[in-house]
Length: 119
View 1 (cartoon, rainbow, N blue to C red):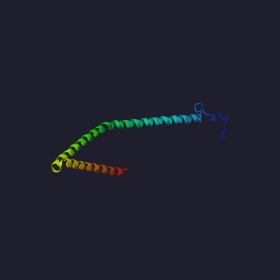
View 2: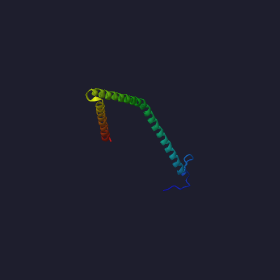
View 3: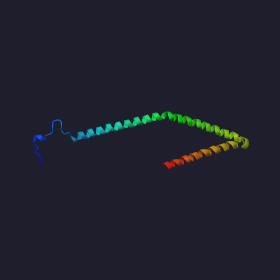
View 4: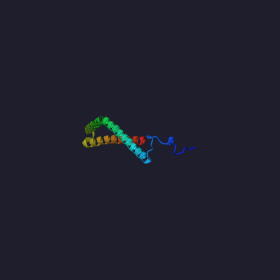
């Protein structure tokens, strides 16, 4: 059976008063915002740490790529100079261009094919 409302043992304790629902919802929203800010700060810190870790190796890879590109240019000129003896300067330049353009196109085609397989 239900207790009567005027029963003193059923009254809330002084520190156990119920708060309004609006106040609880407001506190819940503020806690959610604080949690989201903390998660965003953590994600930013992780991304920043990873970017700092990759910065120097990325610079070194770009430098290595530029040196490699120079080496390929020297090789192309060497091929053209070697062919001058056999087919003349214009023919040698055209032949060297076709050789290295074909190589580049083949590598690009292979890269596109691998990218399509992986995606």
